[in-house]
Amino acid sequence: MRHCLPWPDKRLRSPATSVTEITDEIRAIWADMIDTMEAMPGVGLAANQIGVMQRLAVVDASTERGQAVRMANPEILHASVKMRDHEEASPNLPGVSAKLSRPRAVTVRFLNDAGEVEERDFVGLWATSVQHQVDHLNGRMYFDRLSKVKRDMLLRKARKVVG
Image (cartoon, rainbow, N blue to C red; front, side):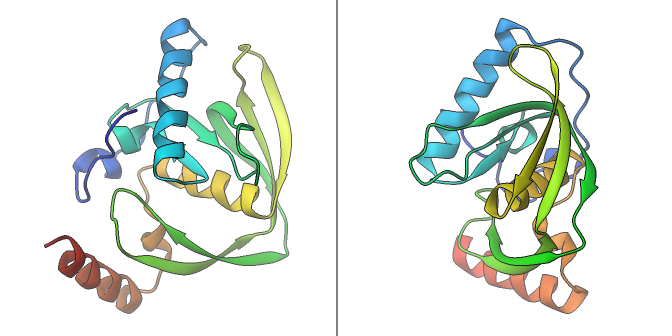
């Protein structure tokens, strides 16, 4: 398990670099990420949230857990027109959350743990989590999708919670 970087660590604002191949080191990072995600508990984690600046993400929105999808260089190829609202939060900014609307389904291309290019459809909470992780890997936080007024209110509230 690893510790999540506290907001406003600049690594949370920096795009992660692409992974060229799946190695044992990458698999070990994924294992740490899954342990960290389970301990939160959460439904996904991007590597830069724990200070690893590589395009790695894990997602597990299953009810029974243990179904984590390991992704390197996830890229959203298609997003549904139909939207879905969900309350989103981040361990990098504990104690606050916001309701966001994102596409209900996405098709994602990524390198899987066998080092093969895979395309997979994600729906519902799985799709929300994948989009949230891709935002992280691009140096964006979920609250960047809020209006300035709502974002400022959320960050003020977060400072009270943490401070």
